[in-house]
Length: 255
Length: 211
Image (cartoon, one colour):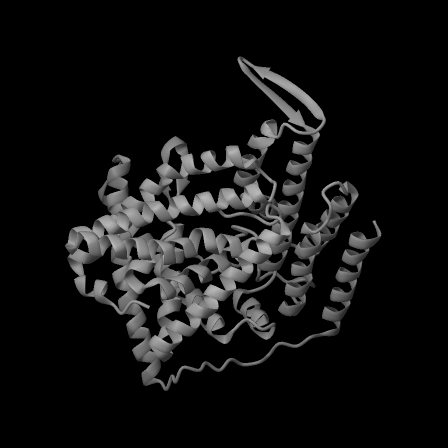
């Protein structure tokens, strides 16, 4: 497993990458909150939100192809909503279609709902991409901790981060062994082999967890973890935050 | 079932966040009391386990693929509250790093895909296990709990979308329930095979302290 499968492109070098994680967390979370609380009929607002976040992504030098491909994760849900549009009968009719014996009516209300969820969810995904692909996982975690995420959660997540690679590799080795020994099979057989692989992984994981704990205790672990505090708010952070949040509020309130 | 941002109305996502945070907070306190300093490395490694399991895609009908959620599975091994922490951690990391589910919708997603399985599913499993008894009871309980919790999660997801005014409830509910009847069979099948495998090779792991 590649070490950057979680925070791909976080190693790049740009102004956005060098910002303090707290700056980015606050800015991009505010972005999401304001976007989803915007009225669905304000089309211009959504265009401006897009330009703002797109500008940040451009400045971060993260490949646009990657960003757009990743942002497609919302598609299944958007399709789910799109399917229901003909069934939203109320409101002005935008067009009706006849497929064989099916009579489908598309209403403006339905289209507004589709536009609403599509734009809001896509913009939110873009802003999370801007956060995750410009910040290294440990740094982001440190930012969340400084912003008040409970210590226990921080420690659990940092353990998860360390071992997800080990376990992922272990799983891939088992999967590779299975593929080398077998081919095809029906879904019942798939469920059985995958079930056995996962069961084996659980046993190994549990044993590993105990070994890790013993190793930590023998090195003096007492339930507390000390983390170096090396986050600094720079001038650039203040500039970015003031700039980003001002534009955001202007779009949200004035327009 | 990972709901993105923008699909849920404000009252719904706020109340789901509050419920999820209350349960997670309680779960953290409970595991800390019972496991003490041991719980941190163990929860972390097991969260990595669920994360890895969710990366293992398997073919579902129609050329699509899916992965298991593992809420009931982790609750069977660890107990409802330890499993709650593990599942919530995984969903939070997925929301931020894979954009699988939104930030405002995270509370709702944790409830639908995690807590319903780890808490409700766990008690369904325990009930059946006690009534049927023996190894058979464990396996039947695991299967029924796995299927039921996935169905309940899908129904709750449809209810949330319906009350948010995004989809008409009369269509969303049967559609979501219908699709997940089949996905639930896979989740249940995998849960049964995994529990059966652990029962056979390391039965002592089934006797772990449940939290």
